Image (cartoon, rainbow, N blue to C red; front, side):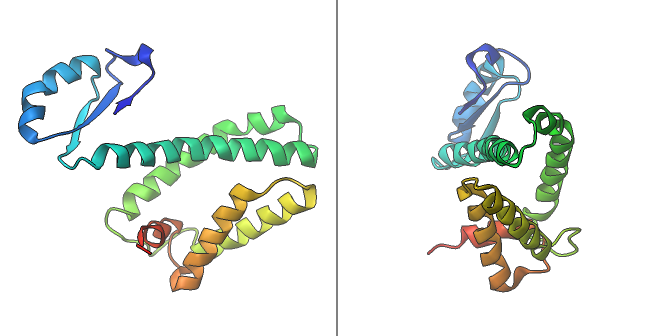
Length: 173
């Protein structure tokens, strides 16, 4: 998986993620590092690359679609778009905190001692949906987020960190 635009090939910060037998990585890893200095061997499972691509794409596009829906509700609520855009630096700092929370909680499945519980997020998402409804803005994305949060709440995770929803979504149906 090439995690860059074509102009990034050969740069130190470019990552090419590879799944292969270890001996293949050992033989060709140096060549791959010349194409992308941050390249990594991520495992031997053939599902690793499509799984990582789907995960990283969702993280990036989730943020982009959040901005798109945010822009729509701002427009319908009469908030000038430049006012919304000026808030991006604060939002980007918060996403860094979210990434740290994810890193701290999900690998160890330690969802207790949350600063903002699922119950807190559910209340916020209900407020967000009310705003979308009041402004007549299409609400598919925030409704999806609220419904997932409600599901985790109904499963008994109300006092857990929002990241517990990884467990809810990972359940096989």
